[in-house]
Image (cartoon, rainbow, N blue to C red; front, side, top):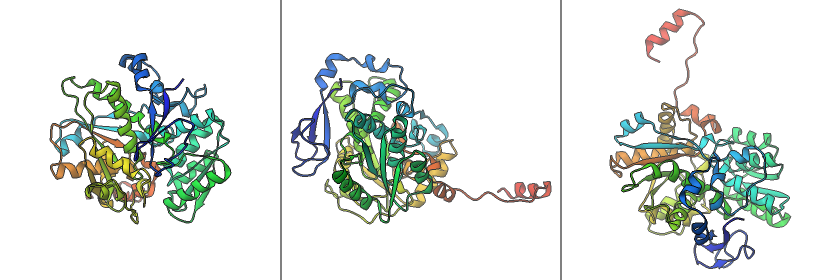
Length: 417
């Protein structure tokens, strides 16, 4: 049985039983934190009981999750998570830092971080016997839901703005979801999805609305703890994590994961979390810099479609993820994001714009001396570059076209292109 015991409003701190609420606090609309039986977990498990597991997926952390084991079978749903961590030394040397890791979420089954939340939500929906699961998405969350649901035969309806990148829409359709393109932005698709779920009795996965999405995303923190922190000298296990931020659910989920580990006594020092937003979609950064957790909507416009959000639905908790860990927020331009795609690519890491945003933030932090050279750094790449080929092609010079002869080839080679 799962360790799930209830919810707590992140704003008013009111606690609810598992059956009292489903999505947000009925008193103030605040996001709900999932409450686990930390004492019970601590009594039943030691660190080694978790780290000795051989399951190469997020399900290795099942004792720390608010769901029962998913359906049996080797499907993509069982392979979400446990993504690789790279150590790109050339990038570290270029930036003048000693220790740098990049966690590549593009290696998930549908090629983005969002598989973590969708695997957990689909599992929960199956256990609740929900007929339809729905979500609004600029592409990645929808693709993740569609892919995880297809693996177990769960029906889904996906709302996406008509401007979503074609590669992401293709994923939705190929996975067999009913796809509805909205002639509006993400926020309008989000609101329509909520209304549809209420009217038709569908289970809504919307990010920053369904409290279990953060529970799936927190598993990245568990992996960082196991893959990096536990391997550091016990007397100095400090780490700074750079995370791109749109609606705020990834950064708040990672923060929740570290908080769970700290509450269990398995994490001595909380990592410092630094949020990075596109300058054209910086509602959370604006709130952080104003010293408040009240989010004022913006008119979002950025090449990083996955983090282009007018009103971040998990903005308050996203602010707290930085303030409570001694972190901060940075903003980067679209030009800096595109440059970051190219720099990561030259180390063998292909990131979509939202994924490269975190690295662009690290570049800026180094330039402005916001981190120390001996500070261990981990950057989250939240999605594969194939998600948005149009943006990738803007990040690099075009390939030359030549005649099929050696003279033309020598001319190009001698030109240095």
